[in-house]
Length: 114
Length: 113
Image (cartoon, rainbow over all chains, first blue to last red; front, top):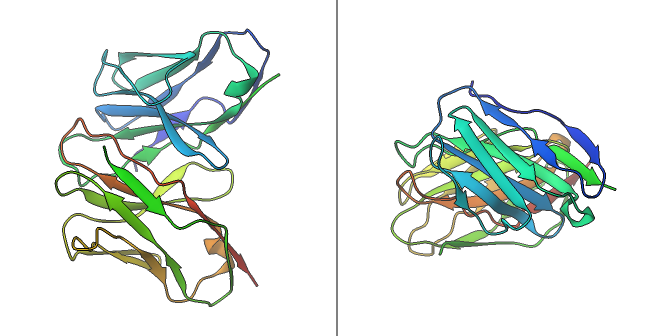
């Protein structure tokens, strides 16, 4: 089975800290995505990457950046954490060759900024 | 861009009741259609999919039929169980490697014994 592994299930950080959320997938998927999930708002796309070293802004990129230096790893960076970035963060990957494949998600990282 | 409308939740059903969660979408071209499920404290999992008109996706007793004429992909299950309590997301996905998936807001299902 394809696995998408997020480095932490729960994380507590202080306001102003630089935060790194790591995501690794083991099936050579080209596309990778970061979403945040908040009650009543569903999933909102922060950034995505079509392939290694590529990145595109999603719907809510402000306050975030990403890095994809290797195909299997997609990192989300909160440059200066703020309380409004308290959320569940979900990483996903997808194989490109056809649209018959859905996303494979990680288990999520619940981030609390205090 | 693509958009999805799902019925508002939460939906509360008794065990063994019939479930329908409505989903309609707008998309360019002929997307594949997916339902994902999210159990408490977990990420999303692919539940079922349909890749062309009139296809029926099925898994774990859930079914959904790709209705191109009504742009709908309603999720159904004949007899729900307590273990089906989760949030369900409808998601159309266009073809090609540069397509993002648009998720609905999710419908929370609670099944009571």
